[in-house]
Length: 203
Image (cartoon, rainbow, N blue to C red; front, side, top):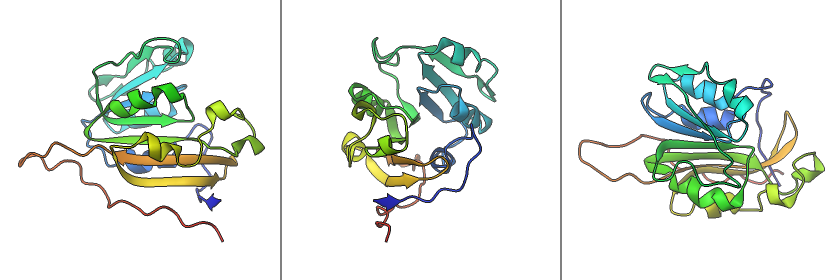
């Protein structure tokens, strides 16, 4: 099992995986935060001047995000049960799609399809084996080995990790992948680090 080292983060703080990769986005980028919950990532993304859209089935949680403002205006908040109802963003694409601590396999094609050319998929959630540490424990909500890599086929993987994280203890997979841009001479696209190799197994 790989060991993924991550410094202690305050409760409610955004994931360091999200902040690491979303920091590369230009300030006028559009970002979808799917299953945004209480909005720890939505708020952080808005502080960077990004156009943010949050989707969650919990209307009360979204009500608590009405104060989220970016220079471009208030956050777009959509109450939607994406597991039992239609995909609410049909035909829309975003410069980044952020998903954390959420897995509903039938949605994976729609999530990947929502990434615009030159856009990023930033995804982190629990992996098989996490049941030893707590919830979620059902296989339905735990990624199998390599599953995020499979879901991101067609995108260029910039970084991928699969292993143990501390504070709190958990097993997770996380990926950052980019949809290759439609090249235009005057639009070089988002400059990002070179793809990273997969982490070496802990010894």
